[in-house]
Structures are given as structure tokens and as C-alpha cells.
Image (cartoon, rainbow, N blue to C red):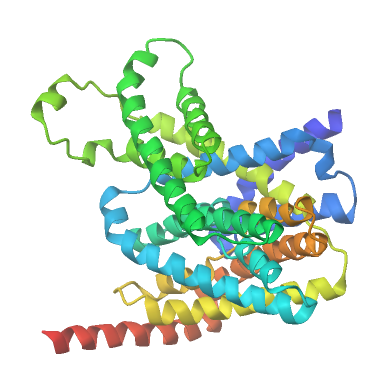
Length: 418
């Protein structure tokens, strides 16, 4: 036990060093943390995910909730409104492209049925909030491109869950019902947002009263867990609810309340700077656990699976580069566009959904789970490697050439229109 406690303390200081290491080398700390997890797990077999029991799954979910909440807290309403349309288009288009690419690979390589191939595609079509949001903050991207990535990562979680589960149910029952899928998707997004927004307003009203009691800095977290849990209980997206809750708390002073009478009687609290610093520290700690735990969970069983996973990752990143090049026409810097094209790592949602096909009794379930975990790992590696390459090597000049020409075309188009 003493050794475990010492290791935990050392990991905390090591994680702080990795933040400094990222600033110097642009190599993201998430990659190093995953590699640490792989070293002490699959390689040295010092610890396994089962060692954490049910606490492992709970802590990974808590990490995701808090990362989404803090991400929402740092988003500006104006940036969200300016980015929402583009984020929605990019999210839906690349979700479809990713599903098709993964599905085609699974169909031709493993001879999966079409439905099972699509289910695998849905599982791997999203991006990871737990990876994307910390990287967006660390890279100090422009507000609009950063917001697009944050919104995409939250929205794709919902898309992956709704489509994967709906098609799994349809595969078992013999019929997929598009009406139910669309209805479930819209209710999950809209009603989860309503829960998050309403909860945010309520909490701002209650905050000054709550602060009359001692030891209340964590009460916002506690209430956020309730918000997430209520949304999930009613089969809506807890992730979207947590994000919306954070957005309201971070932007209340920028939201216009139409009635002066309402304003007069509304006494609201605010999230203080010290509380925001506390939330950042919590994100830092939970991120440390999350990525080490992810490394512990990655199976390395087959060279064939290894190759197929890399094939999927390669196709997805090439497709993303092409999609970003022709879809993103805004006057972003070339480096922000480059980050938009590489920040598509997979994460918790894919890892959780990966186990469902096996639970539903699909004979391909074990293969799907192994492929998914490997794609999650290799996608995070790819993102982590491309970031410093873009910023400090000749490869960055290739991205600059690709996206600078896009920017020049936009300027020429604007001149023609004028």
C-alpha cells in the first residue's frame, strides 16, 4: 500500500512536468499518460482495469462530465452562436463519412454483415471530448475553431450512442425504425439541453443561498452530477446537459433577460475565479486518472487487428483532411484549420460502446471491441504526433500550403463578390 501511495504522489508531479513538456515540445500529455498506463498494465502487468472494480467506470464517467462542464464554462455564447451552424454541418458530414469508411473496412476485411459493419462504424464515428477539450485549451486555438471542435466532440457522443444502440436493437429484432432513431436523437439533444439550461439558471439563483453554508466549493460539482444523472435517467444525453449547464454558468452575464421586472427580482450568484481554478485542478487530476486507465484497458492481441486498426485510423485522418480543406471556408489561420483536421481522436464513448455488441450476443462482438480499443489508442497517438509535427517540422509546411491556398481562394471570392 505504501508503494501505491508513493506512486500516486509521483504521478501527480509527473503530470505537472508533462504540462511543461507539452509547452516545450508540443507533444500532448495525454499520449504520455496513456503510454504509462500501457506500461504498468498490458506490458508489466502490475495492475489491470479489474483492480479498480466498479470505481474505474464511475471515475472515467466523472472525468468526462467534469471536462465537458469546464469546457462549457469557458465557451462564450457569441462564439457558440457563430460556430453552431458550421459545427453541426462538420459533425454530421464527418460522422457519415467515418461510419461509411469504418463499415467498408469491416465488411471487406472481416466479412461482417452490412448491419454489423455499420454498427462498428457508428461506434467509431465520434471524437472524444475528454481528449479534444484539454487539447483545444492547451493549444490556445482561435475561439471559433476551438468552439467548433468542442461542440463536435459533444454532439458526436450523442450520435454514436443513439445510432449504435438503435441499430443493435434493430439487428436483434430484425427491423430498424428510422422514426424512432430520429425522435430519440432529437429528444436526446433538445431535452438534454433544456435540462442543462434550466438547471444552470436555477443554480445561479440558488448559489448565493448555498454559499451561506461552510465548505460549499464542491456543491456546483455535486449539482452538476445531479443534472447529468437526471438527463441520463430519462434516456437523454447527460454529456449535452453537463455542457449546457457549464455554458449557462459561464455566460450568464452575457445572456439578455427581456423583462426588467424579472431582472429586478433575480439575485444571482457567479462562478468566481477561485472556483474556476478549482475546477481546472479537478480536470487536471481526473485527466491524469482517465488516460492512465485508458492505457490499462487497451488489449494487444493480434497483429492482424493491429494492422486493420491502423488502416481505419489512416483512412479517417485522410478523410478529415479532405473534409476540412473543402468545408471550412472561414478566414481561420492555417494552423487552426490544421488542428481542425487532426483533432479527431476517439475516446470514452467508443470504449464504452465497444462492449455492447458482445453484450447483445453478436458473434463479432469480441472483434469489434478489440478493434475499437486499438483505434482509440492509435487515433490518440496520431493526433498527438501530428500536433508537434505541424508546429515545428517541414510537415507543417505541407499543411500550411494546403490551408493557405484555401484561405487565398476565400479572399479572392470575397473580392469578386464585392
